[in-house]
Image (cartoon, rainbow, N blue to C red; front, side):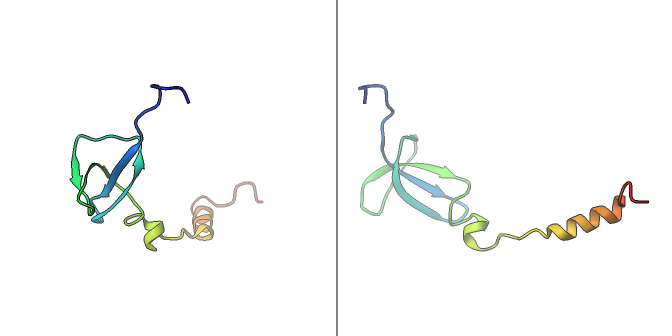
Length: 84
C-alpha cells in the first residue's frame, strides 16, 4: 500500500439511540463525540438511525406484503383491459 493516502482505520463505537444498542468495531469513520466503553477506554462514537437491534427484518417485526391481493385490487379498480 502507498503511504499517506489511506484514511485512519481504528476502533469506533456505533450507537443506535432508538434501541439503546451499541457495538465496538473498526472503521474509517470519525466523530467529534466520544464515549467511555466497557473496557474503560475512550472511543469516538457514531450515532446511527438503524442497526440490527432496531431493523424490522432482524427483530422479526417485518410485514410480508400480499402481492396476490394487490393484483386483485388493481384488477377490481381498473378492470382487465382488452378482454372482450
